[in-house]
Image (cartoon, rainbow, N blue to C red; front, side):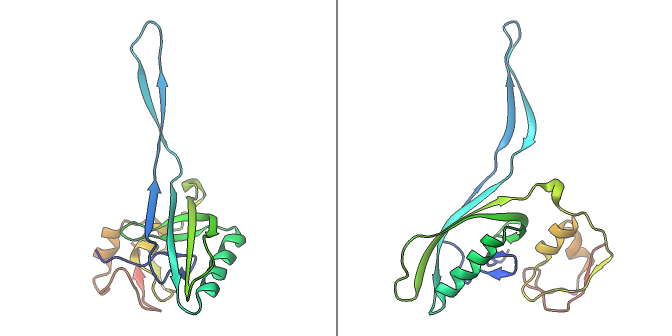
Length: 173
């Protein structure tokens, strides 16, 4: 699989973060009783936390950071695409500039929190027609709850699943 750029709410990170940490924790309840053996129950999973650090490069590195800050201050969830992972709906919980920019380089830290799966709309359409440049089958599969293997099978005309062309039509079912 091609290593895709990290993306959030239409913002493409020009360079993937230097570090990326994805925390997924099971919610386990342990039961003990004086007369019985201990028992554990799996109650599902807690929301994932995605954090890391990276650098923004170029003469516009401050403008890039301001755009991220605008998304953070907006406070809404959006589609987060990570390298080698299916996209998830998430909130940008935290964004920090770690140091003053040095000659067109700005270091930053971030944390995303997964949106509750119950809050994701479950829409069902036969085709998805309005694609912005750079959107992927992973993004569409997550949004419409269709497995990537299903989308690939239904759309043999799509050459690159990680980067679709604007206006490309994707069959969903």
